[in-house]
Length: 224
Image 1 (cartoon, rainbow, N blue to C red):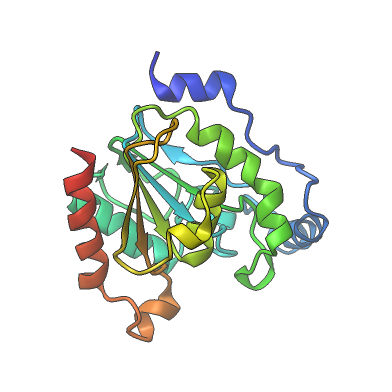
Image 2: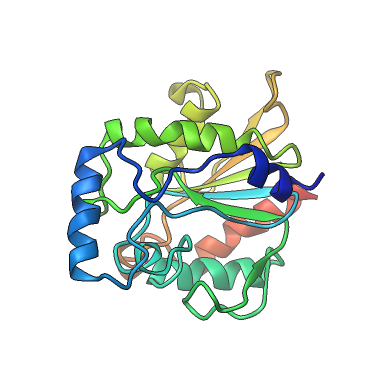
């Protein structure tokens, strides 16, 4: 059975009224009052069958995924991410910055460490911990997974904790590739780090298009 079908049957994502994080619940209620036509709920993962690449971000953007209901859709981070995914063959179609643009992924999944938008785009450690079981359960459904791309340090640390790995053994660094070769179900998996593709990072020069594409050059060689 294909991974997507398995996920649909066995994986229970956070519901629309998830109450695990009181601060995020309150923020969600305020956003629903201000923008009733937006998604304003935990954002589900965007995925294809048998993903070999998993992209993990921090949390939905207020006017991006929180509005559209699809990870990295509707804000600048999505412009850079999806253009790069298309260029390197991990997505097909045209990115229209909305969930119904017809874009499809190719053996790729995209999610966030925290599924609800946090105030000022800053989830707390407790909120990340509360959402971690969803990432744990979801990753377990992808036996074909070869690479996890972590966008930013918080995403990197969330993935390591999900896999039960020590943070000190795999320090975050843009362009770093960490091979998990010590045995266990994640043996052979590679974690690849990148600075987050946010407007702030690109405007300040911390991350350029060339730097981001160089990360995907590495990923291409790992997913084969």
